[in-house]
Length: 333
Image 1 (cartoon, rainbow, N blue to C red):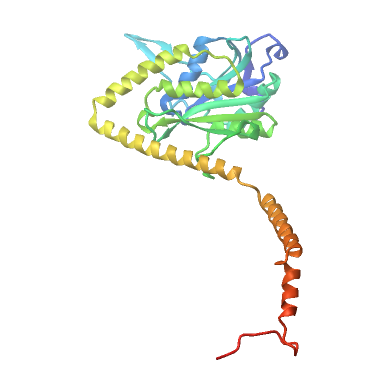
Image 2: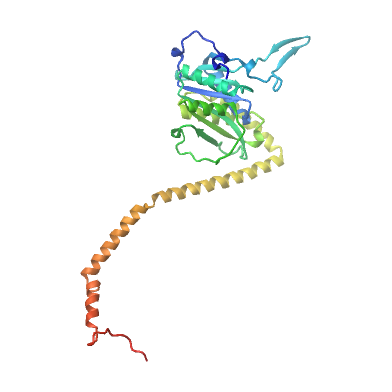
């Protein structure tokens, strides 16, 4: 592997000790981000909070320009602008003055392991102890129901009361996913959220998914990131979606079917939760065994002390013997 330190450049003269931040949010678009949830979330963070660039990656080594060509502007008779892609590490200050890092930009096409090691070096340099990410994935769910998400983490303490929807599955790899693995191997906790986006909204900006992603991040990290502006954008998206769905009978029918499917699934999970709660209230096997032993002991004591007990029965049997010592038996006809 080439030297990972040669892959990034520090963009500040301030010492890393003075720029320390315990949390790093990662937003590497490119693989999958249904509803542009991650993109909208990261744009909102940079558009709302104070931030400075602390490091940048050399994308010329990492990007396949012909595979996904950047945008240029041609103005009448000349090229005037070039949308230069960048992979940048920002230091952001939340609404309560708490610093955190935001790594955002296009997913690298090449040198994933080197990028992962360079990111680990930066995380160590700035004192990061937790990496967190959130993005959208397509799901067969309606936009008229609460948005769900799949949670994952390297440390079980971030997965309390988690009820996984998926078992052991193989999925296409991503640079962001590799960061979760490599940073966890280096002793840095990682956690992520895959926000469930209706499959028919995958290719459009869906503000509600971005709000859900932001709430997942702030709920886990405790960062104070206002969401008012993002909520306003989500409201416009919601109104536009409702209008388009209402004007198309086929789409309306699809949404209705998804609503029924969602409600049935949710009710099934609720009943399983109630059953689990009821089962938890049942006595354990040890408790049942102890009570049974107590019952048998008490029953044995009663038999010994009463005329109908074992001693009384034995005495009665002695009295009913014949003179020849044989017990009385019913005679055959």
